[in-house]
Structures are given as C-alpha cells and as structure tokens.
Image 1 (cartoon, rainbow, N blue to C red):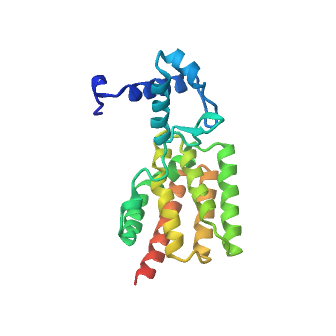
Image 2 (cartoon, rainbow, N blue to C red):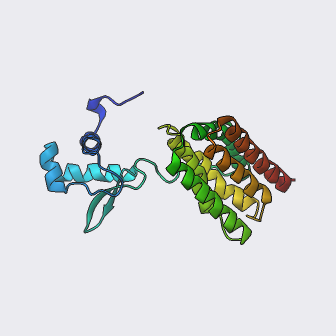
Image 3 (cartoon, helix red, strand yellow):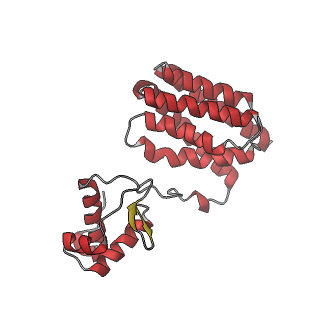
Length: 229
C-alpha cells in the first residue's frame, strides 16, 4: 500500500485520520452525531480551523455528512461515494454496459453461492421480500430499478464477506443502464430467474444459487445483444 509518509501529509489529512480512528474506537454507526468542533479540538489537540478542514476532507470522501446548524454525522454508507469507479466519465455507454456485464459474470455467481452458504433467516426474509416486490412492480409495469438494486445488494450483504459490499457499485451501476437499454419492459425471465436465485439461497444450496445467478446474467446478456442488433 503506497501511503504518503507522515511528513508529506497535510495537517488536516493527519487530523482526518485521527477522526476516523475516533469513529472506529467509539464504534459510531451511520447517522450517529460526532462531537462538536470544540470537543474534537480538545480531544485531538488540534486547532478548530484544522478540525474544520479535516471534516471537509472526510465529507468529500463520504465518511461524514455536514448539516449546517445541526452538526456533523456519520454518512449513511461511510466511505462509499456515489460513483467510486468513475463510470460517469466513460463516454461509450454501450461498451460500458457490456464490460460491466462481463465483470458481473466474474463476481455475482460466486457471491450468490456465498450468500447461500452464509445467509441467516433475516437475510433470507429480506431477499425473498425484495424478490416479491420486483415481481409486483414488473407485473404492474412500474419502475423496478431501485428494488432490483436492493435485491442484488441484499444478496451481496448476505455473503458476510467484508469486501463484497465494496464491490456493490459494479453491480448497482449496471442495473439502471440495463433497465434503460432494454426499456424496462415486462420480462418473465427476470421474475423466474430472480425467484430461482432467492429459492436457492433460502435452501442454502450454493451450487444452485451460483447456477441461477449465472442464468440470470446470461438472460440479461441475451436481451442486450438483441437490442444491439
């Protein structure tokens, strides 16, 4: 890991790292309020203006949210920015869709297998409920994008692997692009493959979950290739 030596780091950078340590030590959770500037200055033995600059750095990294007149809070997904992989700047959206799908083939079948191994009752309930919601939205021709994202996110979280949730942006960035490209029309295969994935995870059957996710992605690829022709 190429870290700057401490001499090369600015004072606000050093203080921002101290604040992260404090967040971890205090076990602060998303939505929790941080101590105010005065308290932090005293605890970290730093000037208030340096603490303020450090907070701005943390806000830019989506670790904290600064609410004017209210205080500073832990961000809802600390450290995970909106577009961490810079997909906004990839001009060729068609290539981006295909390349994202390729990467999802590498990741998601294995993630589904992990979920089938490690998901607890609460996870299974959530995955099944989201599967039902996506189905309902598809059948009533309503936008299912958000619930689809939540379905795939719930599967990733059920893997109980600390790295996998950090890969969620790869999956989530592609879903709106897929829905947009395919016109978000009703597809029985989406309903069927989602249901098969959810059932396999609920049955704690890793191989079946892996195959179901693979088929789901194959189906997505077919739809995209048909549109490209």
